[in-house]
Amino acid sequence: MNDLLAFRSLLTPEGHALLDEVRGTAPADELAVATRLRRDHPADLVSAALGQARLRQRAAAKFAAEDARRMFFTPGGVEQSTRATVAAYRARRLRELGVTSVADLCCGIGGDALALARAGIRVLAVDRDPLTAAVARANAEALGLAELIEVREADVTEVDTSSYDAVFVDPARRGGRGRIFDPEAYSPPLSWAVGVASAARVAALKIAPGIPHETVPEQAEAEWISDGGDVKEAVLWFGTGAAGAVRATLLPGPRSLLSRGLPDPGARPVGRYLYEPDGAVIRAHLVAEVAEEVGGGLIDPTIAYVTADELRPTPYASAYEITDQLPFNVKKLKALLRERGVGVLTVKKRGSAVEPEELRRKVKPQGPGSATVFLTRVAGAPTMLLGAPANG
Image 1: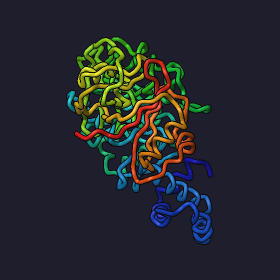
Image 2 (image 1 turned 60 degrees about the vertical axis):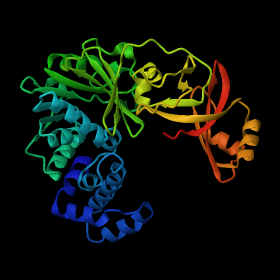
Image 3 (image 1 turned 90 degrees about the vertical axis):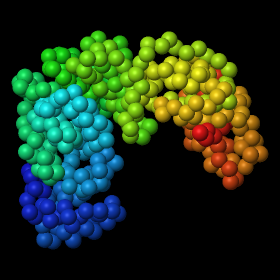
Image 4 (image 1 turned 135 degrees about the vertical axis):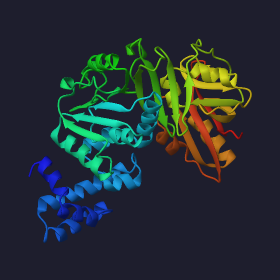
């Protein structure tokens, strides 16, 4: 049985019943469960149900648990789909721009289409892979959104999007060898996606957060998005009236930091406080904006840690109070931790080749206390900064 036929078998009453029965099956129990169920059901259907149950468990990290329990997935779909909170934020922003219909190109399993529909937007969801399109269609039905989502199996480069208010494009950024870093090797290429986006009244183009800033088109607004401190994606926006703008958006919130075109902050000696900017802020090249907010400077011209003498809380960076600064020396750090009774050690690094777990093994922290050590460079020299999260 091929993958598409196996998936369609899950949509039958027998398939739905099996999915309910295998929900929550632990990996260690799969063999016993499969052996029992194959006495009364086709082996291929049992395998498909157990596989789908595993995917639903993985998907709970990206989707609301109640949605993941009802949705359908492919292995690639779980890996590549947008986290639901990020998709919902983008959908809200499109809605605020007056968008009521969107052509979702390269829709995958439909995660973005679902968020758009929940924002009250009519969606044309397009994917050329038959199985992926079938999964997207099943998800629209499973969540009661089929009236707002039309799923079309087609090559996105051949779809007429002129009748839609907006276009959303999410090119494939993975190939047979893993992540694709060259934007022109995306499927479809970035240049094609930019052309389609530029022709639309409003458009959003999802790209990898590591995209070089020099490749961002002049007519686009660039936004880097993090969720819970983890950088998730970058989006090129067209038709927002903010061409050339750069922002970092932090979820939940949302909180957005806009570029003010500030020059790079200068380096200065380490002060009492160290600020670790959010990853989206760093990717958006907005560390200077954070440094201005907290009245600080960099510990090193090449390191995105900001230091200051005063504590000025900001949503765009985590603040730490620094108690010790010493040259990189494992023995000295071990002795200091033993003296302080530190048993819980958080290791952060920027500009250091030392792996956190390797350092923990060497210093063997013991005791009731806790601390954070930063492995970094200060004025070009390998340095260890010891401290703790700042209160305030």
